[in-house]
Image (tube, rainbow, N blue to C red; front, side):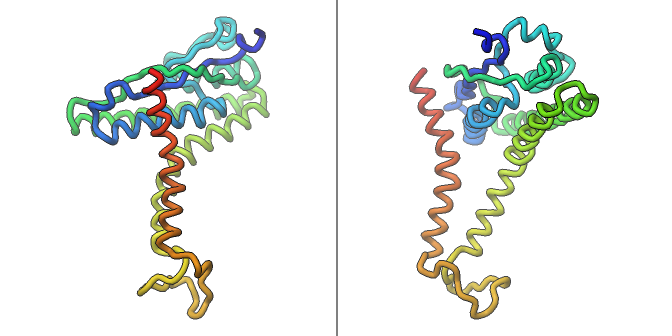
Length: 234
């Protein structure tokens, strides 16, 4: 009873309203947003998203909200840290909340909306990070809480969102050209002549297929399985 007035509550956001009528990349974006919310934002208490709730007493400690910031839901967690002088946990409500995707009437409108939203999210995340730095160096919240939040915030928005895609592309390309075992007609320039090939008993094609399954099917496949489960529940 004491904890429920000192935490934020976040339901599972499912951006799958009418996704069967949308383009493929719109559906993928919606499914991955749900996946990232469940996998990162809620467990690490990074920030709430769109539809969330908290007690009135907790909101009063933070002087309510900061509507002048476009990413109000993201910055609210920092605002609460200033008011409470500690990190405020986010608790999962295991109930899907149906939300419509950001989309347009045709494929051109889809790309325009995609570009607009990416630009808005980038500016909004930068605003939140600036707000965090000002409050941290201004001593507005507890140092340990500020440092720990800064690590998870930077880890998610920089490494997970920004660098994961580039890492997947470069690592897949590296797997294709490097691999293990002998590849007919190709000898990597960084391997000395006569140097033993690592794991020569493993076919490079089998290894490549195994790595791709682990990387894409296991990670992203989990997101699509979760989406199917949400739709069956509803």
